[in-house]
Length: 457
Ligand SMILES: Cc1ncc(COP(=O)(O)O)c(C=O)c1O
Image: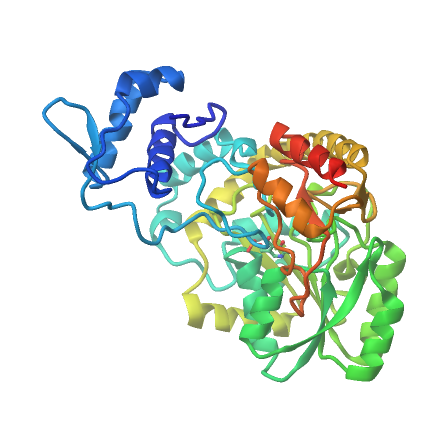
C-alpha cells in the first residue's frame, strides 16, 4: 500500500497518513472487516516510523473508520464511516477532484501549500494573540482596522493610486469586495461587460444577482478596446469588470495605452469600471492601473492578500469614491458585522514589519524561475501559449497536437488535475485552452503529461 507522503508539505505526516488511508478505503478496494496490511509493512513500504502509522490508525479508529481486535492489527470498520460526502478542498476553475490525495492541481488558482511560508505568519499570529485584545475579541470598525488601511495606503501610493485612508474599505477577501459591489451598485437586469476568458466566480456572482453579462475578448494587452467600444454603443452596460494585472486565467497584463482607452470609453459612455487587481503583488515592474488614472471618475479598485500571504486569513479591500465606500460599508455591516479584526491585525503586523514585502519578493523570484521552466516544457511539448506572461501565476496554453479529450486522458493517466474547460467563459462555452499554474508545471507528473500530449497522433 503506497501512501505517497510528501515530506516537504506543511500538512503533518501523521495527518497525511490518515488522509491517504481514508482515501484508500474510500476508493472501495476493501470490504468491511478486512484486515489492513500490518503496521510494520505499511511503515516499511512508505519509509515511515511505525509509531506514525499507529497514531494515524488510532485516529481512524476514533473516527469509526477502522477497528482493532485485541492486538491482531487494524481492520476496516463494519459501518464504513468514510462513505458519504467529503468536504474536499475547493479550487476555483478546476475540474472536480477524484478524491485521490496526490493529484497535481496543475490548473488551480493559488500557490501550492509547499510554497506557503509559515514562520512570519505564525510570529504575527502569536504577537496579536499576546498583545492585541481588541484584535482577538472585538468587532472591527466598519471601514476596517486603521493600522491596516494605513499600510494599504502606502501600497496604493506605490501603484500611483492617490487616495486618503477614508476611501479604503477592508473586506473578507476580494470575493467579499466584489459581492458588496455587485449587490450594492447593480440590480437584476442590469448589463455589465466581463472579460472572456475571465474569472469564473465573478460570472457566478453576477448570475446569482441576476446581472446580465456581455463578453469582451481578452487580448494579451488587456480587453479588446475596439470590441469594447462596439459593446458600449450597442448595449449601454452599467459597468465593466476588468482584471488588470496577471489576469486570471491568461496571465496577461493590461498596457498603459489600453488602460487609458478603457477609461476614456467608460467616461464617454457613463459606465462604472471595477478593476480587480488581486494578483498585484506578484507584479513589480512598470504598469498603469485604471485606478491610478481616475479613482474619482467612477473607478472602483479591488485588492486582496489571498494569493500571496494566505487565502485562509480572508483579507482584501476596496478603494472607491467616498460615496461608494460609505454605501459599501453600510452593506458590509448589515451583512457581516464587519470583517475579521484578528486577520486584519495579523496582516497589519506583517506589513509593518517588512516581512510581507520580503515574502512577496521571494515568491516573485520563485515564480519567475518556475515560469521560465514551464514555458520551455510547453514549447518542447508543442503547446501554443497565449501571449508569454511576464509574471504571476498563470500561463494560458493549448496543445497543438492533441484535442481536449486526448489532453484530458493523458492528464488522468499522470494524476494531473486540469482547469475546467467551461469555467472561464461567461456563457459556459467549452474551450481547449488550459490555465497552467506555473508553481505546479515543473512537477515530474506535469512534465510527463505535457510530453505525452506531444506524442498523441
Ligand atoms: C481575478 C480574481 N478575483 C478575485 C478572486 C478572489 O480572491 P479572494 O481569495 O481574495 O476572495 C480571485 C481568486 O482566485 C481571482 O482570481
